[in-house]
Amino acid sequence: MRSLLCLPCLDIISIFETVKGNIVVVIKQRPKNLNLLTIRFPVPAIVSILHRISGVILYLLIPLILWALSLSLSSPDDFDTLHQFLSSPLMKLLMWGFLSAFIYHFFAGIRHLLMDIHIGDELKSGRLSAQITIVLSAVFILLAGIWLW
Amino acid sequence: MVKSVLGVNHQGLTDWLVQRVSAIVMTVYSLGLISYLVMTQDIDYTRWHALFSHGWMKLATILFIVSLLFHAWVGMWTVFTDYIKPFVLRFILQVLLFLSLVSFFFASLMILWGV
Ligand code: HEM
Image (cartoon, rainbow over all chains, first blue to last red; front, side):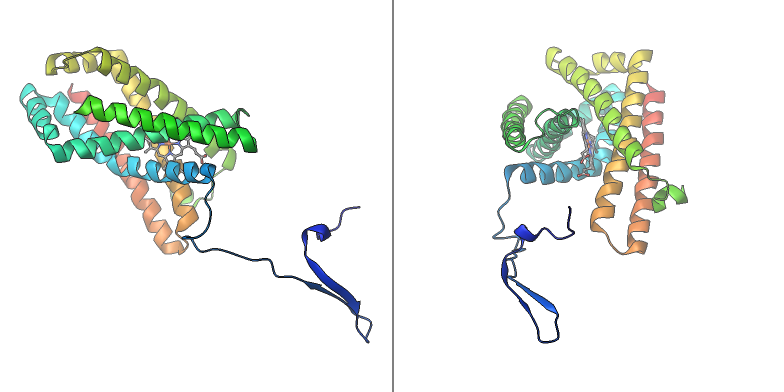
């Protein structure tokens, strides 16, 4: 038989019957912690929220990429101008930011796709694949930085 | 369009599939372009321009951009729906999202057309 409440999950302190015949069940309030500063974030949760943040960053940078693509293809002069422009340290930093978001989103996305076909979708393997995602992204983000400079 | 901005015809499975198929198309294209860039040491205008002059490259790029726009639509739609609760604000954001994606599409057509 299935009951609506999962009784063993509740911390029942006492059960008694009132004079009127009502059954009273006293349960302990479970501790709740929604404080973002003290809550513990498991690695897969971090990987997931970063995937979302990187996706939004990528969306916001689309106009910039299209602008660069347009300049790079319009004429040799514009290509050079763009090249000069992108060689400044500030622009390199911005491009590194874009590449980082892309690299991260890419690996976390691949992890997602693999989980869809049931690779690494259990607690332990999910944790492992989350760690692999972070390590791989870090390595490639570093490589991208070296390639840019 | 109004219907889809409102999310009336947002079918979970379709969204899921769009997100997956677009992700795979983008993966293939990006890996291809990145390998080209890494293998071609000093890329200059002539080479870059020649690459995008090929019909197949234009086709692949359009395919990539269309995937990207659908992907961003589903992705950003989800993000807005999760965090923006006031209906009017969410509606406005989704209309702006839609308009931005349509503009990106025509902008990229014009860029490729000009090559
Ligand atoms: C540069 C263009 C891209 C943009 C603007 C973009 C944007 C986004 C956004 C905004 C989301 C929603 C995130 C969320 O709901 O938490 C998303 C999800 C996703 N992205 Fe991307 N993305 C891009 C490229 C890629 C690539 C290349 C892949 C390939 C692996 C990919 C794989 C995914 C997957 C699998 C999801 C679904 C995650 C889920 O269901 O929660 N994306 N993307």
